[in-house]
Length: 282
Image 1: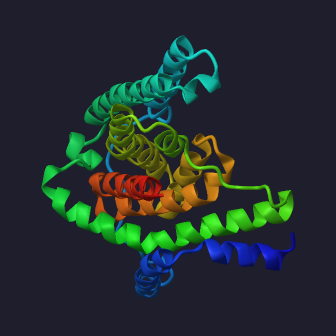
Image 2: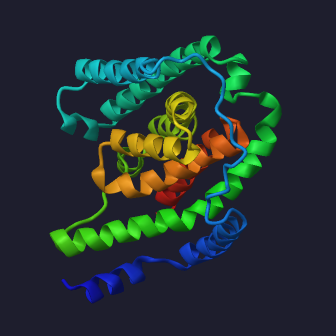
């Protein structure tokens, strides 16, 4: 398959809805580029958050999260094929949900004792919730065209290099939604994917890792880029890395710009919710 054939195939897969969503998003992104001199002045007023975190402190909740999930899954699931069973899929998501909640509690405790203004200094101020939710909607709209472009380009080069059989596999949770139609399993997947995991991952990656790097690096964009790369690599599916990196850049920027951790949490949750809605509609 040559490049022209791949482009034609990808063009056919882009729906009218994609264009409707992407057009206002491209407008917002263009205005942001113009206003901030292509992003160079976007974080000129961003200051490091005062904290006394050591370099290895963010690794504590990350290690607990990965280890606890691995041990629990190993104890309850014999082989990966067991996850095709509805009961096993429910247990897997229950483990993910519980371990994420426990890891989030550890993260909150570490933030409380490490940040100058405790959880408010961490970026968790309830007074900003409504403002952050509306800001997250705008941020998602502005970054959506770039995420779609990353997915299209990944598919294009994947098929160009590895052939027509190359396809970007959906996230495992989306596969569970399509495979298992039991209501309890779907409700648990939605709660875990839209609420629990985004909240924990933003506390860990933006709140802990990005803040720690921001304390040592003069340029905020460098800390955002390094955290975003780490965030993408932690996810197992390599084909998703480009899109995840772009999403993470937006998450990191929203945290630095707003000073609130609720902003990237809402942005991450809305992104996951949009993917779940799209999967259920299909």
